[in-house]
Length: 298
Image (tube, rainbow, N blue to C red; front, side):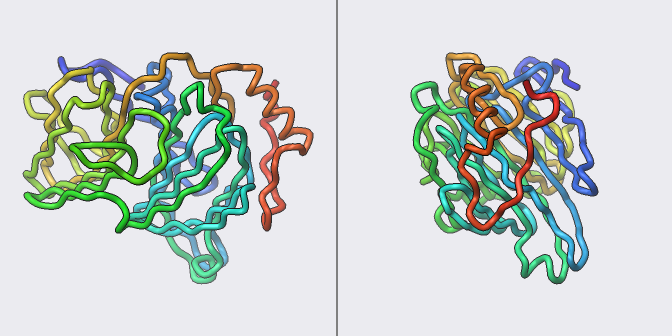
């Protein structure tokens, strides 16, 4: 659902929750009333999920084109494998960035050392649509450790810049357009200003409750708040709070999104689907399973 609110807020979206066999996922973007924020076309928050010994998360190999995926964990660990032969685990505070470009397949699974004893998982994943001139760029993968990401600490604020630029800082994550993505934690009573250096901006509340200076309302977990361009945004934490701030310059062309494919041309999506259906898409070394196309894909 979505609705309009105060003068500086364009939309507030409460994403639906889906239970994928005990694995709760909330998809804030795309929504019925909002497809993108800057170049960000997809936002999933998942967990918290708890699993016992011998259990785990198994996202089988599946394909992507025309986008980058940005994965950030709050709890737990995942093992990434892809068709470019990258194998990389990710833990809380780290970033896995995968550029699909002309085409990549990947899987995400609970590592065996976690699966042996059981564990937990909570995290966020964005899809970032690539500019039209970069849609067919060569696939690549980048892992960034927590100590590689720019941070701001002090006055009750802990900000970690995952991608792009913000407040004069730049993340080493490989990007192709004007954007930012930052995890921000505030102690109770702390304030954080999100300047208008980027045209489109939004925050997704992960935990705690926040208010916006000069605006009515209190916002809790799982709310996506999209701001109007140029709005003065100062976030205040009523209690210890955590949120994702992101956005950037909107891309000029319309984006089509079908299953795991994003493109400016629907024919490009149909071609990628045919390759996957016919087994001609690159496979993932060491992971022979796969997710078939949805039955209603045409």
